[in-house]
Structure formats: structure tokens, C-alpha cells
Amino acid sequence: MSNITEIQQEIVSEFEMFDDWMQRYEYMIDLGKDLPIINDTYKTDKNIIKGCQSKVWVHAELKEDKLEFTADSDAIITKGIIAILIRVFSGQHPKDILDADTSFIDEIGLKEHLSPTRANGLVSMIKQLKMYAVAYQTQLD
Amino acid sequence: MGLDIDKIRADFPILKREVNGKPLVYFDNAATSQKPQVVIDAIVDYYSNYNANIHRGVHTLSQEGTDAYEQARKKIQAHFGAEKAHEIILTAGTTHSINIVATGFTDLLEKGDEIIVSALEHHSNIVPWQMLCERTGAILKVIPMNEEGSLVMDVYEELLSPKTKLVFVNHVSNALGTVNPIEFIIEKAHKVGAAVLIDGAQATPHIKPDVQKLGVDFYVASAHKLCGPTGVGVLYGKEEWLGKLPPYQGGGDMIDQVTFEKTTYAGLPHKFEAGTPNICGGIAFGVALDYMNNVGFDAIAAYEEELLQYATAELKQIKGLRIYGEAKEKTAVISFNVGTIHPYDIGTIVDKLGIAVRTGHHCAQPIMTFYNIPGTVRASFAFYNTKEEIDAMVAAVKKAVMMLS
Image 1: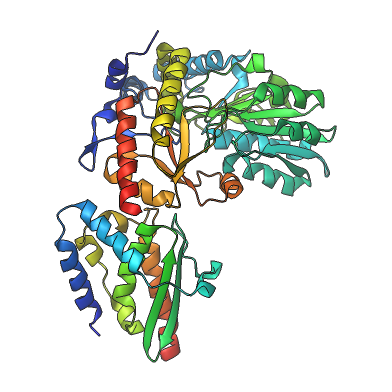
Image 2: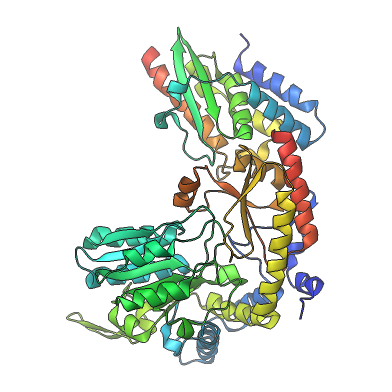
């Protein structure tokens, strides 16, 4: 399994192939469509990330010492964003998730989504994934 | 007389800008309107030439500021058709105006009294009243809506009784654009002795209300929705009602005599205007009303109706598009979804194409719950918008649907 930085680089080079925003969004929409379906029992209010205009559910599970994430959203662009984050973070060690830098989002041309006031809640999503990492890191310690 | 749209558009500097490399198409007018140059100039003029605190100073600047502010109040009085200038309270906006009344009714209600709201309200015309019910033990009743987005008047009449003390309904729904039958609502409420507050935030950009003709007890609105600045609004109240309500905030400007034993309050309108007001905002609000009256509300309504009909017909060409809110009488607002596509997704893509629309629940969650949807895309038009802009929006929505399906 590649580490977080390697996966981020991989995603950055994938997005570099596109000339304009429309192709980048289309790719992101495709990534959203390919996101493995979350078990419906995890689509609870408890797992909803606050701060998004659309609904985003994230479930985290510890497998040995790695965190596995599954997620879903009722909006397809949001689903694409969470799919990218999950590809980066799922299967990683909680400590690595905590330490990870997420400025690659800027590099893939989604800078506008990084604003904390943006209604899609990308910042909230990253925060939530890192919160899970904190929680499970404590378990591992 | 038709409107000279090119001339009007030239009055609004922001309409010249680009967004994401595309000419801005601003269809979020129900959230806030854009400002004409005369309003921007009035703000600059105030701070450049006669900024001073008002109502207290004897020096020239203070006098000039006071005169301009009180003249603005008279313009607002004339615009809303109030009998007296002191029935016009300048507030920070519609929400502030509603809270003054909702708080003021605390001592006027008893446990078991009933107050009536409609299913079409913005959260700001629901929550302050729920808080009032919590303080007093009064009961909140709701006029239901039907599938086309109109209020069900038969049920309203059944809800009214001698227990009813207050009815508060918006003149126009922000989420759907429905124009509510406020004349009927006011008449029926008065028959059982209830007071009525009309939230005119969404109506005032399109309709010039006449509070005396309506006989309404309270009418509230915000300057920023009708070409004025943010942070200013109006609370019209009949003199007898404003006299009955206690002050909302204590402070300077709202007192008559202050001793540590007892303070007596100033008369209207100052009783409700504690502290230094938004002087510049009030003056600019007056200028905005002049501007809009100059354009003319009849001409605005006729032109916006044309835009509404055109946009409705064009949008309906899109397969799977459903419009929410198809009341016979509505303002130039179209709330819609396409198939099962999330409104947020459409809003994001059309923004990339320079189109500003609103997505989400529009602070009217009960309406979204009624239709069982997460929200809608809302395009709301103003008199400075054009059919060409509607074409650009329709093309953008089509593109978004293609990408998202």
C-alpha cells in the first residue's frame, strides 16, 4: 500500500491530465460514482458530517492498526470529494492520517472548495476523518 | 411604459463583473439585491462629507446628519403609506424587527393564548415566535400549505378563535415566491381581535405595500433586498401597538429621564432605537427607495412577470425538471430540482459558468420537509435581469444536468 503522500501525488498527476475545470469536475463525479457503497446501517445521523449543504456519512473501522473508511453523500460532487479523501486516507495508520498535509486539494484545482465557509464542507470532512484518527490512535496507544 | 433595461443595468456597477471568466448572471436577488451607483454614492457622501452622531449634537455636522436621517424616515413613511413618521422604526433588518415585536409581546400573552404562523415562513418568522411561546406558554398554530405552494385559507379560518392573539405571515414566500392573500388574512384576524404582523422582506422588492390600506398592525422589511445597504430595516407599527410594547433594548437615545431610581423612556420612534443607529444605512435606504420609485413599482412588476413567465417556460423544457411553488400569484422566483440530482450539485456547476443561484433549504426547512426534498435550486429575478441571462442560466442548467446524470 502506498503512503499518503504517494497517493496524493498520484491523484495530482491524474488531475493534471485535464485542461479545464469541466473535465476535472467530470472526473471527480466519476470518482464519486465509483465510491464503494457504504453499508446502510452506517448511514445514521450520528455519522453525518455537519457543515455540509448535502448529507455526508462517514464510517470508520480499525482493521489491525489501519483505519478503513467508507462514506456516501446524497450530492454527487460532494461524493467525489469524499471519494478522493477516502482514497488518500483509507488503509492508513491513524498517526499518519493525523500528520497528513492536505494541500494537494489546492493542486488538483479544487482550491475554492478549501474555504472553510464553503457550503460543501470539505474542511469539515477532513476534520472529521482526522477526528476518527485521533479516536482510534488513542485506542492503539 | 416599459423599462429601459440597458440604462438600468448601467446604474449597477457590479453587473459589469465576471465570475469564473464568464459574465456574472446574478439570480440570487431574493437573498440580496445589487446596489445602484446612487446608493453607493450616498454612502460615500455621508462618510466623506457629514459623518457625525445624530439627535444630540448642536454642531452643524450633527444637524445635517440628523436632518438626512429623519428625512429618510419620512421617505420610508411615504413609501409604506404609514400615517405618521414615528410609526416607522429603523432597525437592523427584518429579523431584528420581528424580534422587537416577538419580545415585546412577552408581557401581553398568557398561558393558553394562541398565535398563528404559516407553513411558508422563513426561519426568522418562526423561531422568535417559538421562543415567545416558550416564555409565555402560548400555543403556536400553523396554517398549512398545499402542493402548489399556497396557504390553505379554509384551515386558517378554522384556526382563528377568540384565543388567537397574533398572526404572523410573510407577504411573499422566500422559498417559493407565493404571494399570500394578506388582505384576507388581516381581515379575518382582526375579526377575532388578533394583531397581525406581515413579513415583507420578500415582497417589498416587487410590491409597494400600503400599510394603512392593508390595516396591518406591523409590517417589517429589509433595505438590502430593495437596492439598499445591509444592516438596515424597518418596523412599521400602528402607534397604539408600538405604544403598548415595551422597549427592546436599553441605552442612549431611547430615554427621557435617567436617574438611578427610575428611567422614563423616550417617545416613538426613539423608544425602540437605543444606541447610535446605522445612520449612513438609513440615509442610503431612503436613496434606494427613491431610486426604485423612480424606476416605478408597476413597471418593475410587469417586467419581472415577463421574466418569470419566460424563465418558467424555458426551464420546463428541461426533461425531469420540476418547479416547486406554482401558485397563481407569485413573484419572480423559481425553485426547482431536476430528477434526483442534488440542488447543491447543480448550483456548483452553474456557478462555474458564472450563474449565481441559491441552493439549499432557503431557511425554510418546513417547506422542504413538506415536499420531502433536501432543498431546491432557486433562481430569483430582479428588474435589472434580462431574458439573455435566463438563456445563459437554462444552458448552464442543461450542461450541469448532462454532467451529473
